[in-house]
Amino acid sequence: MKVLMVISQFYPIVGGAEKQAQLLAQTLVEKGIQVKVVTGWWRFGTHRKEIINGVKIFRNFSFWGMFGIKGLRPLGMLAYMITLGLYLLIHKKEYDLIHVHQALYPAFVSVWIGKRVLKKPVIVKTASSGMTSDIKQLEKYPLGKYQLRYLIKTMGCLVSNSKVGGDDFKDIGFPKSKIIFIPNGVDIPIEKKTFFGEVKLVMAVARLSIEKGIDVLLRAWAKVSVLYPTIKLVIAGQGSLESSLKKLCQDLGLTDSVKFVGSISNLNEYFRNTDLFVLPSRMEGLSNALLEAMSYGLPCIATNVGGNSELLGGENIVIPTGKFTMAKHGPLVNPDDPKGLSEAILYLMRNHEEREEMGRKSREFIRENYSIDSVVDRYIALYQSMLNMKA
Image 1 (tube, helix red, strand yellow):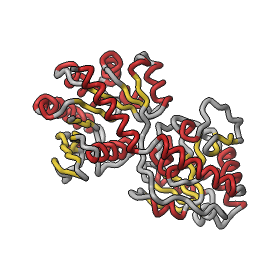
Image 2 (cartoon, one colour; image 1 turned 90 degrees about the vertical axis):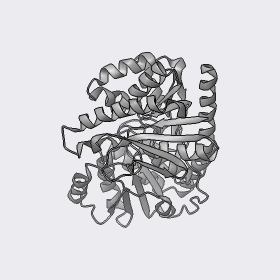
Image 3 (cartoon, helix red, strand yellow; image 1 turned 180 degrees about the vertical axis):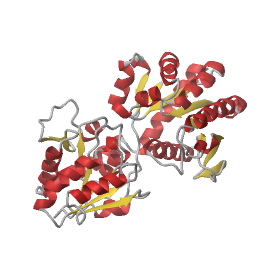
Image 4 (tube, helix red, strand yellow; image 1 turned 120 degrees about the vertical axis):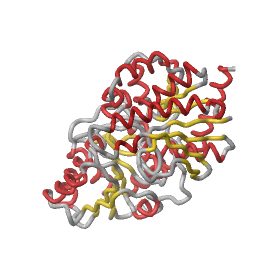
């Protein structure tokens, strides 16, 4: 079985979708599946061809993102779409099916050329929901609404990593029968959280952008730090709001208790010293950071959006403003609610037995339902099913 993975950006550009694509590709290769990743050549100086952990990578020309010049990037995207289409045609004998990560413009090209022209199975995976969903993003691109209508009409299979992400597509007319739920996967670490005594370190891992709600966390932390001035908050991630968030931190008088550590490739060392994990997103797909924290056995707090409620086990609940609800695997709070978030943090800080139980249950839940091995097995079964239908 030869799988061609298509994703607009890939390593060394690292985000949630890119991280999942890389982990999935590597694990498929370990299980004997031939995988090649075709992506965009966005950065001058990156290798056109390379192999990373057994995964072959090819980058299609895209004018290197038009050198980062604002207003010209769409030309780079157009070049990428053309070179991607040519690649699919020229190398058609080198793959059996196409797996596209994100229902964006590469999905349009892949479905048009791969499914319509070459008659090959094409699987499209959508990764987010709400205002940052693939639907909303694609509509912003030139001719994006036309591409979206074409995908809705032509896609044979849509994989969603969260139920709410699948519902977004169902709501705009894509058949429910063609939506398959396969979550993101995570490597289950050998190490796990073992000490649940006094809370000394709280951590958040997120892109520093508006949808991740780090500003809300800082406002909640202002309430926590007044009562517990020695406790530290570590924020890992980079993004366009970094300077404004640091300014907010200063304005709130939090510079002594909050530390921004930038993007961290391996979180295990931080998780080893962390007592509590917080994800304050305004919108979310299925968070890799939350998966990783739960797999380590950390007690976690998250907002009641996207896949967060699925992971913490509190779907279809209503939370009063300024409050939190204790779900199966941790507290859920409303987005944009600093008071509710601070109350949840303070509650878990003061209840170490509950923190320990939640950490243990979280790790068991992730190991049973979200391990990368089980996720890859589901993809292999889907690939085989698609190939059998073609035959």
